[in-house]
Amino acid sequence: MHIPRPVVIGGLGVAFVAAAAAVRFTLLQPAEGAPTIARPGAPAPQISLPVVGGGTSNLAAEHGKVVLVNFWATWCEPCKAEMPGLQQLANELHDRPFMLYSVDLQEDAAQVETFQHDFGLSLYALLDQDGDITRAYGVRALPATFVIDQRGVLRQQRLGPLLPGDAATTWSEAWVAAQVRSLLASGSSG
Image (cartoon, rainbow, N blue to C red; front, side, top):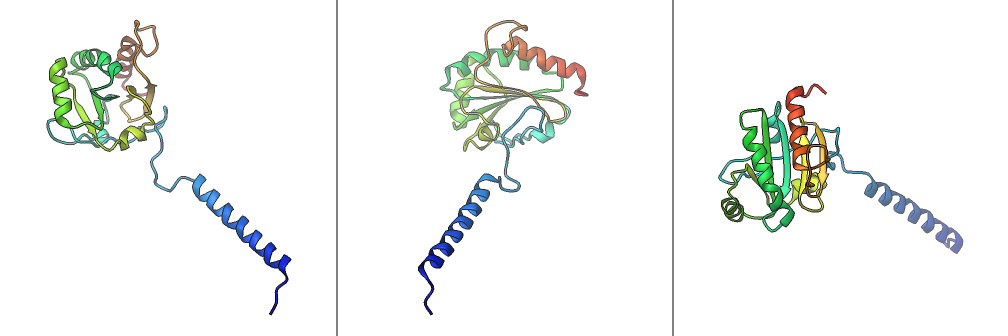
């Protein structure tokens, strides 16, 4: 049986358009259950990472606490500049329902321990060795800081270093501390 050439070409064209449409819709739709990038006002992505010194973190278990998450690395100069202020905040709030997650990107425990020793730090340091948590939070450069309320909702995010200044300067160390203290005082009913 002979099929005319225009019918064959037309049939191939329809098949091509159908295949292209299927590929387009498949690639544009996120897979069900796929993680999404962290967004203020939405639940914070889960953090379950090895802790320097042993154990595993569990952000879900911190329900009822304000959690400040800081992504960093030992080679990052702005990260080094932020560490003393973050340590001071953690020290000041040690008896409050507050937790600082210091998430190191793709380094090993020995590097982090040496860094903490050299800088006189005792932060709760987590190891994101494969970068999955860093990507889930949408971090593309270090440092990055996130404030999570007592209900596990991401309230604030800073993709970049903290700024110099006082509590009136948005994203200064003092401003971040004021945000944390405000959430602690409110009990996260907001």
